[in-house]
Length: 440
Image (cartoon, rainbow, N blue to C red):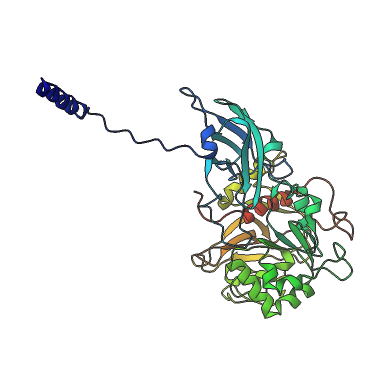
């Protein structure tokens, strides 16, 4: 009897270990952060957010802006130091849902966590803002422009650190104000703000009391590399000649670009591009030397040869499809093939052509126009160093409006709607600030 029981136990044990034909199940990885709040919807359903990303003012839409929900629910701090910022790594940290805006600034974000306070981040370059929104499960929620515009101030989000050399003849700082950057973010370098104004003007015409000279910035590399972008407004010849005669300032400008800085110069400030041997091969100006000479030409020789008269009719190039779409989608659209350019100075600086060797020194021409009987580039951008871009340079022959009154900021800023060329510079500001290389 005992033997029969043992045999039954043995056979039963063997039956328990016989394979069933189904592979063993792997333990499920537990969800993390806001991934745990992504609802499982029925067939054909999803939790989605839709909206339009705009400039800080909320008026003009922006293409190729990043929109995402961070897994942690918090923003990862951006790097303080100047660096190469590549589009292959557009955000810091992990995202639950992620997308880019289209040419019209519109986006649709799918697979979004649901809840009463879901973080949503909109970002273009170093302009970054996070808001919290109510997201119902398995529905599509349309967001307002107020929820999806870029930040106006550091209290609303991140802004790039900008140094502006206030000049005699135009005022990019006023365009920054027109696109929505708060007045409190535009001040002197001794105050905490996103935009610092340096003095590159005639004596006695400072934009703000206590404004330091531009030379104090360009001769101090440790100070210069605290900024992501440097704007050099059109100004008188004496200022740039004195600055560019200093080898320290020249070296620092090149190093600023090498580390990932962005440089923007207009009209009479062209020498900040032409007088640097590292940059001069990219653009040949209408001056005292032939374009076969790619080393620096005569100082300020292009000013006396410039054209006169308003307006100049310009056209957006085929290279600049993004700009064409931006102008077409403004609240008051601008015909990209017929752009009136005004506010030209007598003797405004003209470009003869881009690089003699475009393979070694590639550039993008955004705008062209006929002047002095020749079709010529009006706005050119290029990356530096060549073939290994880290920094970016933008030069424009035309500029923004001059000051309405002598001083101080912001009372000298012109009133009324933006000029077509100011909308172009608005677009290029965000292109200049954006990451480099292919998206993804």
